[in-house]
Length: 145
Image (cartoon, rainbow, N blue to C red; front, side, top):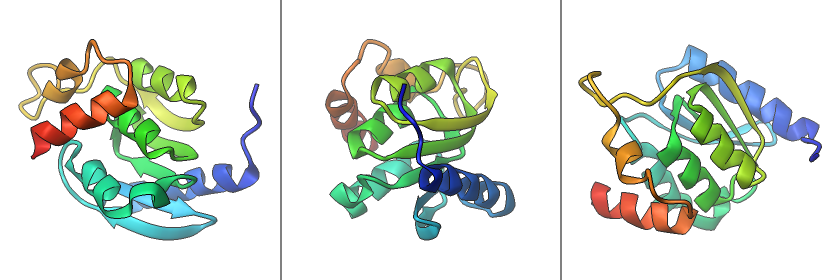
C-alpha cells in the first residue's frame, strides 16, 4: 500500500475548495500553488492542459469537475501525482489505482452522461476497449482535433 504524502493530500483539499467555490472545470496545483485552471466542457480542458504544460504536469495534483474513464486515462498519460473530483465513476478510480495515482472523490456516479443527459458520454464509449493511457490520449486528441 502506498502512503499519500501530506502535500498531495493538501493539494487535493485545495482542489476541492476551488472547484466548489469557483467557476472552473479543471485546476492544476503543486505545493499549495494554483498553477493553471481552465473552464470548458468535456475533456477539452484537460487535453489543452496536456498540450500546454506537457511533462510539467508530472508530479502535479489535478482537480477535475467530473472524472470518467477518459479523464482518468489522461491523468495517467500526464503522470499527475494525485486527482480530486467531486464526481467520478468506479472505472475512473480503478484506472487511477492501476496507475498508482491517489485520488479523492466525493460522489460515485454510475457513468458519465452525454451533453443531452440521455446516454453515455461519447468519449467514454470510444475508450471502452482501451486499456493504455498513450492509446487513449491519441484517440481523444484525434477526436478533439
